[in-house]
Image (cartoon, rainbow, N blue to C red; front, side, top):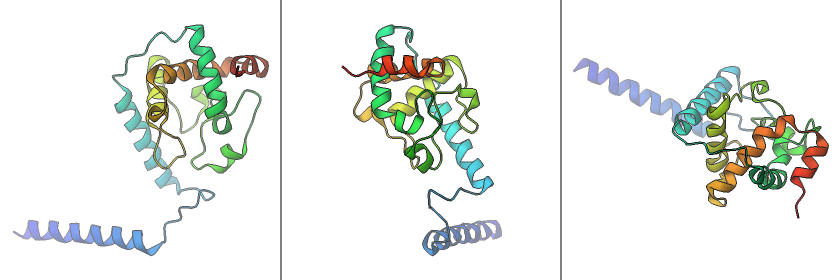
Length: 177
């Protein structure tokens, strides 16, 4: 009986602490002030593990089709480049203003400290899932509400090639008819 009372007391204390933090306004939610290292780590680990689990059974189609690259290129330019940049671009108003900062997709995935997505098919599955479902409280929209899977796979195919593109190649591939 003592254990149950202690457990109920601890639960009430946890709820009271959470309510105090929520309603006190002490948590800084400003996008121009970073989280503490611990909070940042908890959020990043939670995000990465959630995406990994949700994407693990997604079947990756052949992403070498040139038509996918062209379709994905124009969508990337229109929907993604303001945050995730274009070849030769180091920053944008959006990339500077968002927190957490969106990964620069023009560089290899292993260069994204805190945004690593694995490699090969695992990377493709995760990119597909993120584009389709978005990420809460990050500025990353859920494009699956307005785009079918084929169009999302085209963006994945383009993103896969993006780090290898020169600014000139990018301009050709993203030209909108």
